Length: 220
Image (cartoon, rainbow, N blue to C red; front, side, top):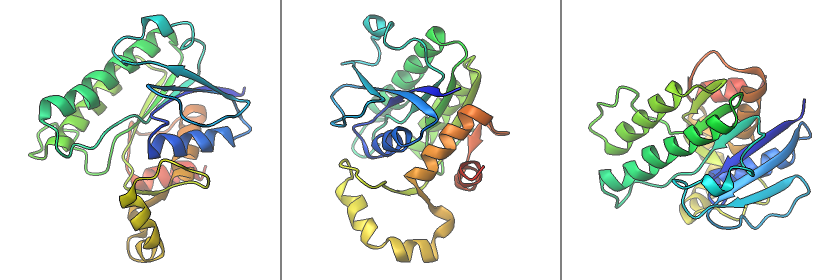
């Protein structure tokens, strides 16, 4: 059956790339972008749910019900943030959102964008790796039909993206060299989006997917 998907973070680079990939997938029937502001994309399959605070979703229950999968791509860099501030966004808010949509969609599959070098033991001296690991573990404990934490590295944007940070635009100039010398660390956002779709429809043998796992799942 065609999938109905919720995507968060569509005003950021990763979320926008996943959104565009999903809109181009004929097996996805409907995409709901949940964000604080409009994503700036118009498409017959796309609907938007604007929420000022992911910790308060009560008024959006009707819009957030009836979906098969949630691709959680919202996030923020840890640069300049205290551990408390980063935890609020990366752990507390993300887990609250996932807990809420699972309650309204008990047969839903969750894919959650984490990051390469995340520490699942939650003991790392690197703050962001420790917090992301805590978020991954909390997601796995939720009673979704399936939970898949994605740990991508460098990702190339898809054609038509608007939300590409300056630092990534610089990297794009170097992409041919990056692919040559660091091919194992590189993914395209099309690959990540396809892997998310395949996780929702086929499942995967791991809850935590490293770069090689994402590449494998995308090719199935």
